[in-house]
Image (cartoon, rainbow, N blue to C red; front, side, top):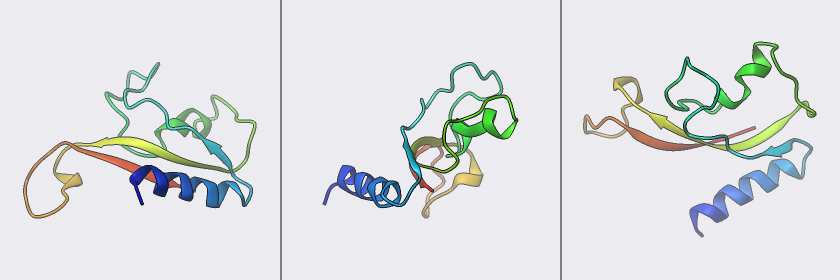
Amino acid sequence: MTGHDMRQGFLQFFGDRGPTIVPSSSLVPRDDLTLLFTNAGMVRFKDVFLDKEGQPYSRATTAQKCLCAGRGCASGDDDADGLFRLLLGY
């Protein structure tokens, strides 16, 4: 099984149960001067949470590309910074 197969299976599983499958947004957010890069899966919904924009759906599932940088994102035994993650969310 490939990573693509796992992502598609995740999205299809939840998509079959009602939520709208929403594509990943850009790793570099457009029109948002407060962020240099997408660092969390919910960034794509920021304007919805701030009541600046609505969506034609009430539930969503996505596989969001994210860049994690800094010590709060440590993963494993080394001190390497800058980690690319794909967050699967429902």
